[in-house]
Amino acid sequence: MSRIAYVNGRYVPQAAAALNVEDRGTQFADGVYEVMAVVGGRLIDEVPHLDRLRRSLAEIEMRPSMAAGALRAILRETIARNRLVDGIVYLQINRGVAPRAHAFPAQDLAPSTVITVKHMGLPRDPDTVAGVAVITQPDIRWKRVDVKTVGLLANCMAKSRATEAGAYEAWLVDGDGDVTEGSSTNAWIVDRDGSVVTRPLGNDILPGITRASVLALARGHGFTVVERPFTVAEAKSAREAFLTGTTAFVKPIVRIDDAVIGNGHPGLATRALLGHYLDYVAGQGAAA
Ligand code: PMP
Image (cartoon, rainbow, N blue to C red; front, side, top):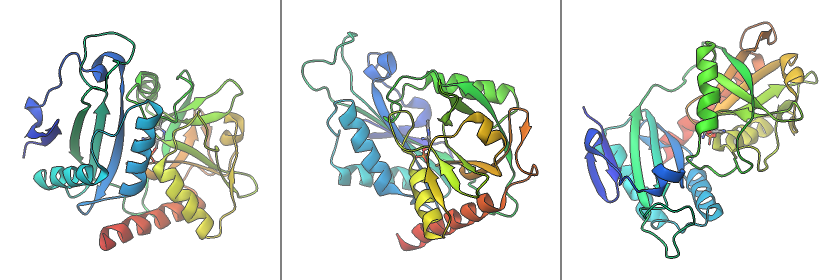
């Protein structure tokens, strides 16, 4: 079945979906986005994703393109028209169309809204989950990566280096030698004391929705959780390492550059957290 995209009020075959060439999203990456997982036909963590979208819009000085209720209805309609059971929904809102000039137009433009879906299998079993490798790369992004804008070229370059190296993800490293986050995921370790560690929120990481859910689950299940920066060196000698994200869920890391993590297999805490996250996701599917 060919996919259906939502573009500015219309549902169209994805191959025919198009934006104006002077959409500021294409010329200046002047737009924001969200990616939400769909499990059993239901959106996971929809409310925090839409809250983050509202925040991103505010940070780039855009008004919401439509009421939250309308947006939620369109998301559901797009899922239904695509018969999407498991996969993701991609939502992008650009500032709109105007003759090319850097400054924001004096008057608000009509924002462009695009929604697409992707059918994909999502993680299911903590006991058979495979560990992945990551490489480290310098974090060369701008200073407001807490805003989920479509300006992702630096992330794309880092991820491409990872793919070329046969790795799943690139961990980005700041000027102090600390890991900020992955190119499209948040970064975690289990340190020598057994604490679950991830970098605190700030302008230098995306406030991941999966990060927030996993933090709450870890605390709720009695893990010691510490939000603090960690260096590449500490990560390489950590007991466990893992990453979180909307499509990755909780993914064990078994190698960072040339360093093997732990015994080279997914760690106990990581697998436990994936199990808790899978239960949490399944619970949302049943309750919604
Ligand atoms: N960091 C970056 C840079 C990302 O692009 C993403 C994915 N959107 C994440 C972290 C993980 O965020 P989430 O859990 O909301 O998918």
